Length: 312
Image 1 (cartoon, rainbow, N blue to C red):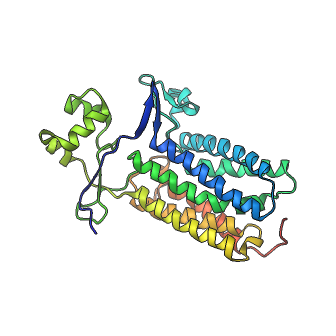
Image 2 (cartoon, rainbow, N blue to C red):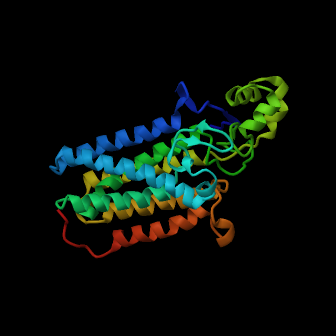
């Protein structure tokens, strides 16, 4: 089946109350945590761990992942915010060039991963009966499906899009709201509409803007490629935990998660347009690929290191 030039132009806002916007992206982040908590509840019950500890772990995870994801994006991809718009780093707003409620956007998976490691380590120090590697293995099972939901959120936001591709490609997608191909201010200028949403809809549907529509290129839906690979990895991790004895080897599931997740990320980077960062300085690979390589190496170490005694 060929989409043959599929137009993608959803309004990223699910609903709005005053100046507060609830976006598909934010909703999918919430869904990721809810599904993750539900699966971890099953794991805790199987391992005879108190659900109260799961609630505490959930708080650690949410705070660390959101904070790490945001700081990671700023450090690796948008460091100019530190001096130009520091309030936007941790608040769901933009103050430059004017105030705007943006929701929590600009989140980096590498930063989320590093922050999650730190949070789980601190949690294991507080709860001596739950060792660090034991936690990493169990959290790894649910983390991948969360990553998949986040990439679906990116797809709804028309962000982290792929490279330009011919219309005849099976999954060629025209992201009408791509901030590089058709930024909001330009869409408004061209259509004379009052809002960005109205401008984008006019470009897609009104015959007088057909030429503008044709100027927007088709791209790989790289977010969907990545989400699909993450769902597969989740299935493999879930099966390995429930149906094999590999869960008894400390670090194996975590290593499997690291290798699978960051290999998928490395491969999909070939289909993504540049996200910036330090790739122009280092060359050869994208910023995302450079950051993925050490993650894969860490994962291989934990998968194939000599077996040790179970930690619980």
